[in-house]
Image 1 (spheres, rainbow, N blue to C red):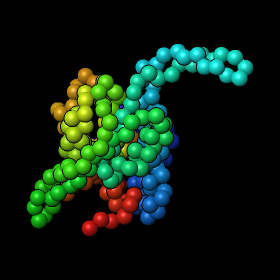
Image 2 (cartoon, rainbow, N blue to C red):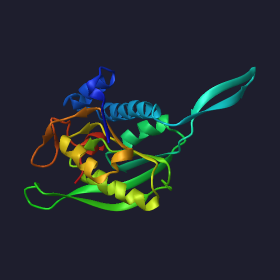
Image 3 (cartoon, one colour):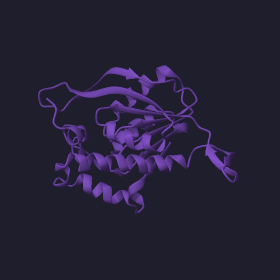
Image 4 (tube, rainbow, N blue to C red):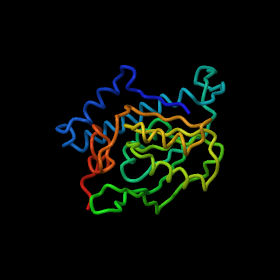
Length: 219
């Protein structure tokens, strides 16, 4: 399994990360969502370099141009609700891709909010058989929701390749993906890897709850 940590090289993505981590910048939801979307665009562009391509002749008004174009079919899968702006960034790059959606949300199993369960109840997806499956979720904390989302999508086929895409990951989340996803065809893409989580299973230092910062507090 490949781990691509984009923070290991200097690029404009570091500016986006600095802004979405800043608690003052976070007060503007529009700016926060826009940077999450731009990180999705950046990761999509990097993924595009890994696809299979073929030469195709294109008729222009003045002649014929030979262009290498991707042959892989894509499905962009998103975990509600935090994944929506992230998904939009991928869709702006892979605009011909199929789209899949699953709900997966935290259910705390104790009064102290230390024991976290994941609940899945909604699935809408095309066939993923022999396609490149991108699962976009901004936070890869424990990896539990990513695993359950993946298992839900597997009811609609077996993907050719799997790209687990997040903004921030933890070593624990990456280890969980390594245990539960196919080793030979999975790549994890992230803009940063943070050292761990707090007692409520939020990534530290992270940037907080991606869904709340994008769309407002939930009850």
